[in-house]
Image (cartoon, rainbow, N blue to C red):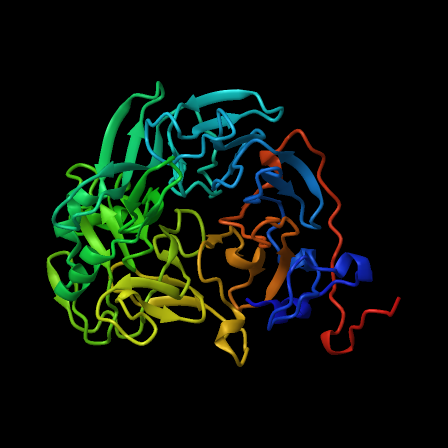
Length: 479
């Protein structure tokens, strides 16, 4: 959602509190921050944890009224995402030194992946893990709360998304900043690994797609000093499928939904895939094209109409299977950003064919993984807005299904979190006040809601409704 619509959720604040650090632009520069809408009776109340992407601020934990109840300034200093575990533990990237910001597995310039207790003491560490975008703990497939599967087992197996520098002539002649997924046991020993480029031929990219990728594999400087690489696929989510009804119903027919299998989101290729844990092969995929006449293959069959209503997904984030025990369990949920991504024929908006798929609005979609039938969709259109760009984050962002059926959405590019009902009512909204001073943005990669009982160190907070003023009559008094 853009700045213009933040005003719709404006809380009655003083003129001083309303001043934004944004420079003049086509959207309003004055809008509220903190909790701007809150309807306690309609929310799944708890704490919300998020990384600020500001080095000096790190990770913040807030209550429903936006009060900061805890802050860890040394966890996720512009890295992402932090995750709060039951018992008041926090997981995330920690820099052994200020200049160690790398995201390459085992590299001396990379961050550690740690779990700290409430007081900040490190209780588990994967040195130089170089985690980027995602990781999971044994017993919790997605890393967010689901009944019967709390996020609490930080001593068991871990799944970590990282990078490796590689070369693959099938993709490009340039060095790759390749996505690397690794599973470690309780002692930190690698027990499973997967390298994206090894499975290039399994991803079924069209010839024109591959041709552009070869020339422009998203090649740029990385966080490792002096190293460039092609971030050709850009995996931004990796999670286990976890226990699910499809596997329970027929493990032979739906073997691709084995709970141990891993689902990934590949932003730059507009694809999402399921990896067979035993073989490493890709056994389920959507994209890169979603045309009405595109053929979708599933379980050895070809479907001509599966993509018809799903529509083109562009630059998506947080593709995952909704965990068992939550409304919509077994369905796939995706934050479909829009923005720009993909490879292929050039067009006026993408003269080189790089990121040639473009769209200026976002949506959250939930669909049946067996048919691609859309079960639920949230966007500006569903909220009754005239302009589709009124719900828009062109990069980062996420969606979390809550136990009461609501969905917690992070519109990350504009630092906005919203809890929405199945009927698309916004029942809680928060705007992050943590701005990067150099870039002047309040980006948040992924915010996550946790139950109050995850944090026994705190008393149950008071919950006070926040009712925004009428937008059209809201005024700032003159000095």
